[in-house]
Image (cartoon, rainbow, N blue to C red):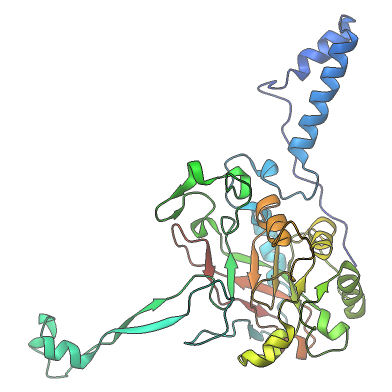
Length: 358
């Protein structure tokens, strides 16, 4: 079930600057001096203007938020929506939606391995004697251990930034930012992880595996709009504009056993189901408990149609590998959702530890 959506934010198409000449066209028409060709041209320009500024897929497009926007659909969060999300907390139970990270963990095959390396140790500092502040006046024998982490920000439970996926010969991403103008030697200069705001929204779980009566969906299965609608109806869940929607395939019921998880390899969201959640449900953030979010692409011309549709075309961030097993076990389908992405300049996403509170 979907609650009626909010009206799309007002677009100031007319006003300070009549950049499309529409006001002049109207005046000419009123004077009766407009020719047939002028009328046709005017109608064409008006149609293009309306299509350009209102979009054809989902309210959360670059054109709604302006040509310089780097935030996308998360612009829809407001103080009122945060207060409404907080009111969903009744029991105070916190669900940790991060399965964790460790050396040798399951990863999408295109990413580097995850490593935690010790950098300094108490013994090393003592032997090298390069930390003078510990060499004197230290009867307590204070030492320290420091480390560095090697791995992509797309390790484990993470959020894709809007610059993560590119398309076209110009390699552009959200809002037509592109490599020729907006990519530096240390990451994208536009729509990077630095621009992702803290997220506090109403959260909804859609348990597709539970709806279909399986522990996990089979390998390669593409979740359909009918699956999502059926699960929502079975749960008695109402989708509302501004939701974060988490979709359970059940793959992480096998975590961290790679062999068990492999039984659901390649399953995930299909394009039609994703469109239904964004265009019909007006969700502003989606997550799936798999490494790639979407199913193996059935489109022979595009290996990542859902990523393109969400990140590039609609500016909707993607979360992958959220742990949804506890929510599903307790049948908690509505909650306050909180996630604080790391604010890293030039990063194309962020490792996250989201929580659901009911």
